Image 1: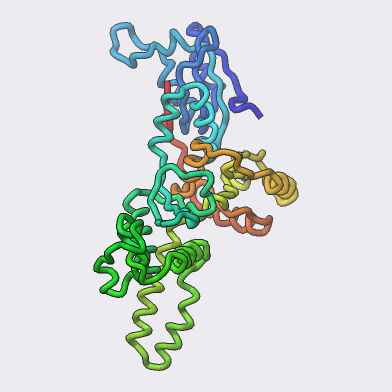
Image 2: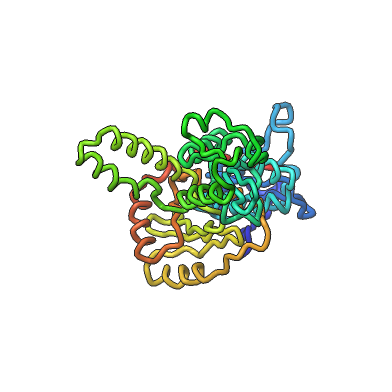
Length: 369
């Protein structure tokens, strides 16, 4: 399926009203090219007709207007209809990467989220907030996380919840380091001064890693809290409850990068039409539009069978998927690799969301040149 599958030639001598009538007033990604098929502007807009009217209308010679004389330069418009933010950005960013690399690099920088990661095999392991994951540590890297401050707060929560070392420069002196105040407060077992062995400390690291992998890290403590409350041990129940609240915040760390496999359910061109997108760090696939279970089932089967091995870290795919995990777009629903029943239930939720009114102006979403 070509990225841009519709093409409209343009001449400054054409009847402009007739030309515009043939142009859809729909959400598209489109490319403007000159008489030698050289691309010079890529856009994602909510209304193609309004966008071309704005850019190609002939202006009086003495009127101040855009610096680009579009009407004299444009000779072809190539476009593709899109129906959701995730679809529009996928088409747009692929084209931007090939045609306008400066714009593409700027987009990546703007989209870059944060992650938390650890190498448990290191002699002195520690949780870190990072921007650039290491492919060798995908299973120990969690995210995406919207900001550096949030990622750092999660690191601090792990340190508090599992009594991990806060001062790495002291830890690396083990077992001859001088313990800090956290040992005196009972909040660190002090592997730095040999109070526990590094093997014991590694087990604490593994416990913190297991908590992030657990779908609900606080759930296992609830029976203990209820039992303490039933025995009138209210102080103990309060401490357990506080720990549960602390562990519950770990859900915001997302998932490990080796589990980055999602299916996006997206709006289609009609009220009860939809599309699916497979989002993995190895590939992204967009399905044809479908409306019924019979149409959807083979599409889903093909997507679910698609390989997801990651041979190298592609910052483009990582940034794109992470952005849409964090975006929570109203015109799509992001699901884990799902079965037909789950997806059909999601179509009901998506159909209930009121779509945006179609804009009367061009509604520029992205623009590069």
